[in-house]
Amino acid sequence: MKNAKIKVLIVDDHALLRRGLIDLLRYEKDIAVVGEASDGEAGVASAIALKPDVVVMDLVMPVMDGVEATRRIKAELPETNVLILTTFGTSADVSRAVAAGASGAIMKDASTDAQLAAIRAVAAGKKSFSPEIKSAVLEVPTPEFTDKQRVILEAIARGLTNRDIATMLDISADAVKQHLAAVFAKLGAANRVEAVAIAIKRNMVKF
Image 1: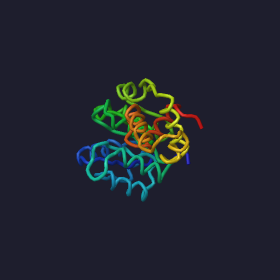
Image 2 (image 1 turned 60 degrees about the vertical axis):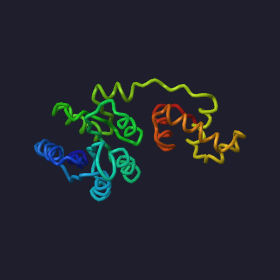
Image 3 (image 1 turned 120 degrees about the vertical axis):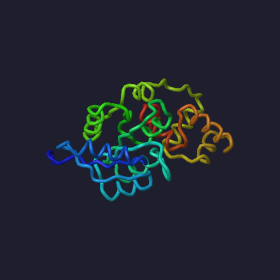
Image 4 (image 1 turned 90 degrees about the horizontal axis):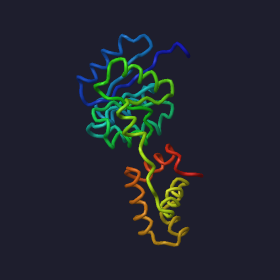
């Protein structure tokens, strides 16, 4: 429905920030705050229950951080878009959140107009990043992989297990783990799911 309001869920462990955002958004005719949560785990549960169009997500929270909450929300609700609201534009966690499925990230000290524009942009299926975040997160050089590392990255993107890869390359499982550790480090990924997500977003793997 074209005239439906954008449903927003706010997830942040700081009550004053949540209240500030609610007060900001309540005057916007095209936006409706449908809920709030104080940690990532509660945020995931609220998102599943409320099915918002946009989740405004903090990164550093108790119980479950914003990266993991983003990953779980996108897994359960692919149509819900996540906008990261952060104090640290160059944080590695911002890159991880983008890899987990966040559609944008904006600084907490950004102007009111910028925050509203970001919410509307991600609700429309677009990407939205503060300039300093965009340069730090998106305009990063492609890491240099060895031939074997690239083969292994493409293999995990196809869903192969470490044992499958070891058999395919005729190397030990321990060697596969060592290569994967190097791949994760070069991508800034915590695990194979994040590594694949980053590689796909940056067109680094072919199927």
